[in-house]
Structure formats: C-alpha cells, structure tokens
Image 1: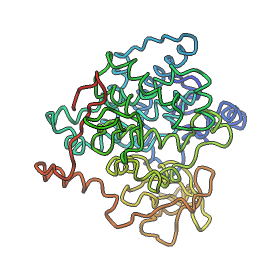
Image 2 (image 1 turned 180 degrees about the horizontal axis):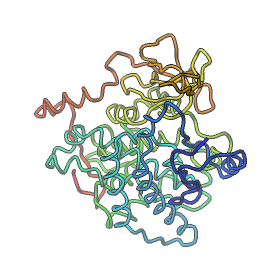
Image 3 (image 1 turned 30 degrees about the vertical axis):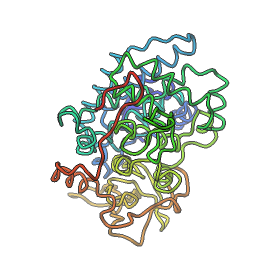
Length: 426
C-alpha cells in the first residue's frame, strides 16, 4: 500500500507525519497505530476519481488554523492571561475559506483534516471548518436572516469562522475542577460551566467583530429556547434566546458544536475508550428528539448537506457481506452512496492482464442493498431515509428564497442584541 495523501501529525498540528508516496509496511502501520492515526488514504486501482476529496491545499490551510489554536491552548496551560493574536486567527480563517471556495469537493475530507491535537484543539478546528462549509451552502438563508444589511455583506462568513474557532475560548478561564467536572459528566446545567460563555465574550468583545463575539456568547442558545445564557427582556424576567432571535451564525455553530461532541465526546478519554461515534449515528441522533427541536431546521439541513454519513474514500460493509469503498454520495439520499467493490479481478486491457476492482453500485438504485457496517461499528440501525423524496433537497429550498426575496414574513429577522457591547444587529 502506498500513501495517497500526506498524513498530518495527530499531536503536532501543522506538522506532517508521512508524505504521500511512502510505501506502508507492518512496521510503519504499527507506529501509526501507536501514534493515534486512525486511517490513511492509499492508492488503489479504479479509485483515482476519489482523490479529488483530498485537497492538499485545504489540508494545509486547515493545519495552519489548527496550529494557531494549539499554540493558544498550550500557552494557556502555563499562564492565566493569554493574549490572542486575533489578526492571525482571522487571516487563517480567510485562508481556509478561500481554499474551500476553490476546492468544494474537499467537503467530504473531514476526519483526517480536523482530527489533530488534543480534544479542545481538535474540537475548535472541527467546529470552525464545518461551520464555514455550512455557511457557504446557506448563502440565501444568511442573506434572508441578515436582511438589515446589503446582500454582499450578509453572505460574508469570515466572522462565522472566527467566532466558531473561538467559541469555547472562555473554557480557558474556568478552573480545572470545573473543566474536569464538565469532561466527566457533560452537564450543561452546571452554573460554573455556564460561565464560560460570558467569560469568553468579555475576553474577545473588544477584539473581534460583534457577529463573531456573539457566537462566543450565544453558541449554547437553543432554537426551542432551552439554552443559555438568559438575556434581559423588556418588561419580563431574563430568559434565553429562541428561534430567529438567535443570530444565524450562533445557530450554525451551536449545532456543529453538539454534532462534534456527539461524535468525539468532550475530552480525550472518549477516544481512548473506543474511538469516535460513527458519523451516521451522530447525524441520525440530531434528527430525533431531544436534539431535533433544539436546532434550526435549515441549519440542520446545511449540516447534512456537507457532512456525508459515509465519506468518499472510506470502506463500508454492505448487507450482502461485501466490503466496498464509498466513491460518491448525494445529500438527497445520503445513506445510499455510490460504492465500488474493491475485490481485485484479472481483466485483459489492450492485451495486458491487469487487476481491477469489481462493479460500481449506486445504492439509490439497488434498494435491496444497504450499508450495515462503517467506522468499525454496526450501523444497520443508524441509517436513515428521507421522509419524502425531496425532504433533504436544500438547493430547492434555497432557490425558493432566491425567487421570492420579498417574502420575509415566514422567516422573522434575527435580533442579534446579544448583550451590552454586542450591538451589531447583522
């Protein structure tokens, strides 16, 4: 086996562990396992078209962003007063955003790109990366929700990336006992844990744009009004924000924050005890209660349109027992990807006897087959079907909003009055 894409170092963000082209042997594989590398891209006959999912340019931009987060968290371990280089953060986010725009197929290359560093570093990078992918997909929705400003400004998502990258920066200011308690129980009702959103907001509010700092304060607000913090309400007791009163950026980041926690847990102990939860299982959980009503349904559609349940390039097992490679997928029916039988068979091509994989199968057509195993887990009970043929058609939904730009009644505007000091209503 020959490595097809560089392997980023799992504990040294920004560094490359092995370059593409290295031939794998048992000794290297053993060292990779000890280092914590879960999977690698390899060259394989008949699967060259999957290579577009692994852009080295996006991987490099993501690694630079992760390196900055890692440096901040490392510094916080030695000093209670960490000075953040906000310009560097914004430049890193803009660099990644540019690469994502130029290489949109990289939306499927998630795990290895953001699976670096300690849990806090990996989580911040993952939430930023996926949030920007969603922002790119939901441009008409953002324009609709940010209608108080010009469309060209409303569709800009650099501040979404900055706020997503720093959304948990307030955790650095909590005492170790509180962080340990949160890591062990994940109890969001803990008053000491809840302080991290205000602490983080106070830390960044004068350094970054209000739409970014508002994410730090409000990423735990929930669409059904069950989140925190409570905010002052005219003529009534303070209460959490709900629905369209939560800024669109905070709605996206709050969703991605929970999705990543569902997959990877809160701290490194979860990964050490058995690895991440399969992507399809986390996506399925978000579509059921109690999670479903806590998130904006359009933001949830955005997440499902950029994060495949079974990423191209990965191996899955079908219900007939065959191990196949995922080569493509459709957000309209995400749990039924296009797969390639990887068992090599002799075939004569232009007089030469070559080894090539078997048939390519579109599971949307072959309804008698389904994925039953992925990411080293039985996922037969996690696969989900769209409730109706166009239920997951995000593009159709976006087109209706573009075609009816004057109809805003069905979707109230955001009120982004997060707290005194975050007054940017856009």
